[in-house]
Image (cartoon, rainbow, N blue to C red):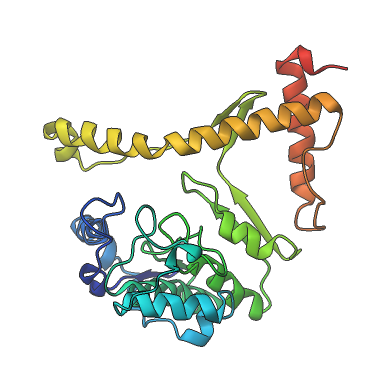
Length: 286
């Protein structure tokens, strides 16, 4: 069993801005932590440096119009209607090198997919990837180019059926959108229904021992900052739970058509979930 570790020092030159919660220095810190634990020098592990993804590769999912907007704002050109593409103050700021950063992130995930598909690696780890919110013609949720979609497309091109398991704290809506009608791609997110009006969005924090022991102020501040970003997620989850309850009370089905055979397992999950809702809230019984 061999492991490919995808990493580039080029990430250090990109910056979303001082007020943005996505700090690019986290990648360098993660890398140094991995080095300190000896993970980058394991006998059957190899470090690979990615090349930026080609424009045509990115255009397999993203529209040419959107790509040209990304390139323009990245170069410093004034685009008065950038907001139509999800760009501007807030989640998806415009900053120098935006396009190059997106290319590099996509290139890393494409490299990971190729190494696995070619049998050069049993598994690949690209911790700068996972920008799963980006849509074909719009940035969303800190994400400009959807590297996960591009990697899955490459695997599908090679004939693989893909199970995409999203362990982020937010639902990977861009990936779901890309493959909803593809019976050979299964997408799963880790949002856990805990009742008819409760969904658990589980987040775990890990710190080096010396940080956890001696830098409690940092730990508390970091967790508090993250929780501020969860307010919108809580609102979304509450609306989803209210919608499921309303549909069930009406006797309507709360899920869409299943794509067989890849989504057959989801049908059993939803049947179990509906049974749990009825068992935990008798007001649902008709």
